[in-house]
Image (tube, rainbow, N blue to C red):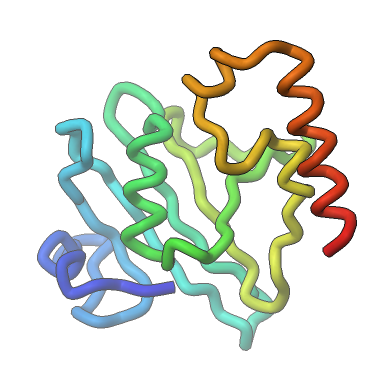
Length: 152
């Protein structure tokens, strides 16, 4: 988890969420990519007490953050090639302290497994390219990609 110098100017320095510059946790009020102020609380975890998770919560005043805002926040705290996740736990484990808050998580003691790319879509093909392809051509391409991935 990273906390950039750019982020420092948005850090809460007073009040209940205050933290000191360069600490690996804190609360921030950051202008987002959609023109809304994002309220962010970040923590790098604490392995000494068994919290092996980096965590960032993102909230707005009247709605949940959108995909573009969550991607923006992910880029503030993690590198492009790091996997970070949003979780949908069993309903019995839901905790909702803020109606318009979403969370990003990354365990610090293991890698997050990813599904095979072919189960998500066809890598390297844009949406507009897909729209121009016949169903048969898409199936052939999927089969080629699947066979290539199994050879790795």
